[in-house]
Image 1 (spheres, rainbow over the protein chains, first blue to last red):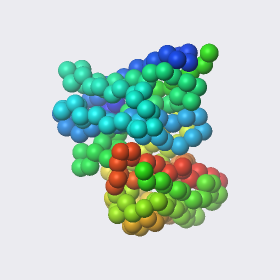
Image 2: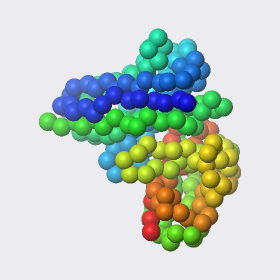
Image 3: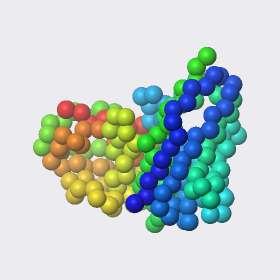
Length: 120
Length: 107
């Protein structure tokens, strides 16, 4: 059974960076994609980007203006998402999710989420 | 990008009743539409993909319909565990994948 285990909560100051990890069990990294979605407090879901670990292809949300980097370490079956130049608007729960094997664009397995708080 | 609009924002229903949730796309997504359920403090859970196909393990009281720009999620015979927030998501035209703002189903 595929599981995604995310790293723990983070507190950062404005202007700093944060990196969140997502470790996959099962064969997620041998095929398919890992997508990152965030959710600000009381708000909806925002797609941040995705990576196909087997080939290293990535896509990012344009709105994040190059502040997001997504990488994958296949040997550790772990994906990482880094956000730089944090502001209070980046305070959110960050989820990683697996693209369904039949179609990577809908998300069938999710991590529990990582809370990132940006505060001075 | 394709904008997804859900209505109503909040839906008040009683256990055992039927709930009908709507999702509209700003332009056609054909049938590339998924629905998710999210409970407080939890990650979203995939319910429906391809507009009408239930994901593995999803009870048949959940059904999806629609194509083009108009979609509906119907929950028949609401049970206590169904009170949650529901999001639609299009995956026809990306990046970015886009989600609706959600519908909260409450008692």
